[in-house]
Image (cartoon, rainbow, N blue to C red; front, side):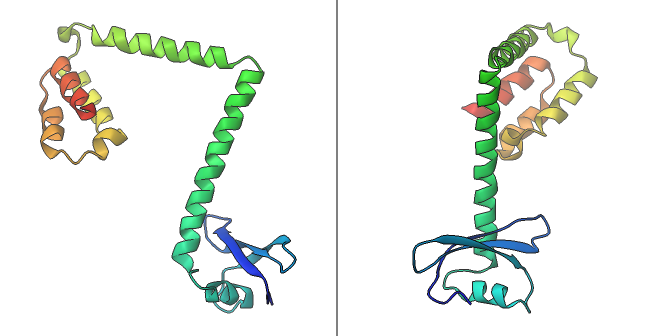
Length: 161
């Protein structure tokens, strides 16, 4: 089917992983794509899996990388549009306001943080990637056992050390 063609790349196009795009290079150097149904009876799917070094795990990895690259390009485009439309400064000002609010929060009187609020803050902290991905069980325990707002902030800050 693709005799003489060189396999370049492949990735899934949908969440169900039922369609795969395969990029080939013809003997003349022209790139072209095939949309391949993922089906063990499909000759194109069989041909793809017969390519040395290609299997479903490789295609999953390619898909992950492509989605990540597409997301980065999208985010860069959003920033470029925001700058072009004059919205970027508004975004920066909003972030600055959030930072100032966080600084004011760190100056709150400890007695203004009751046990229920402290508990809710702990729950939110344990939903953060930094805490979830931390391997330091002792530090997580100290965060969990913090008895006041400032000891909680201090222990949470230790994640960055």
